[in-house]
Length: 88
Image 1 (tube, rainbow, N blue to C red):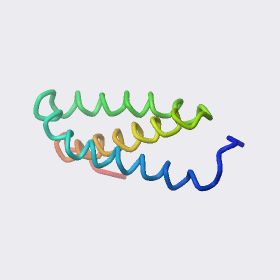
Image 2: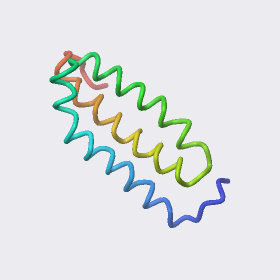
Image 3: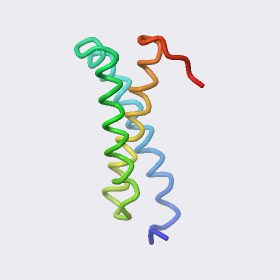
């Protein structure tokens, strides 16, 4: 029990979607500059940083963790075709 009202679930979901949109805009330049493998590793770091933030129980860290997790998921998915990985 986090002590957060159920109405905040939509805000959590919106932050995750915002992370996806931001990394859609920023993902291509990151991949072009650092390469697909480095961008994939950066996405993994963002996911690793976002998970504990999202589980912290405080609303600001929950929202920031959601933003990072959404963005890292999109950045990693955008790299699959560049490095030849096939989604499961």
